[in-house]
Length: 82
Image (cartoon, rainbow, N blue to C red):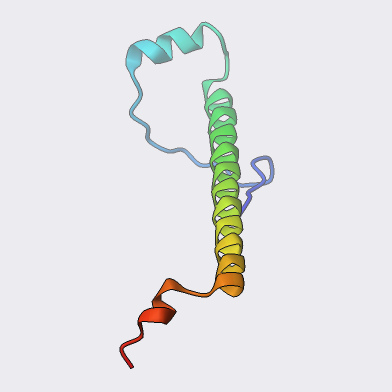
């Protein structure tokens, strides 16, 4: 599920962040909230992409295994206890 950052309501949240790192970051941005939001949005997008990629790999693996099973059958078929 992708959320449009620009169209959502904003609210204050509590974060625990290294104080020295915040001081350093403020030297590079005058809007720390916007910077954090941008970085968090990028992180979420990267995680969603990675999850889609993992699912694609798993789907391809399952398809390959199903093709092998259809062509060769299952090892267990030769060892039925029935």
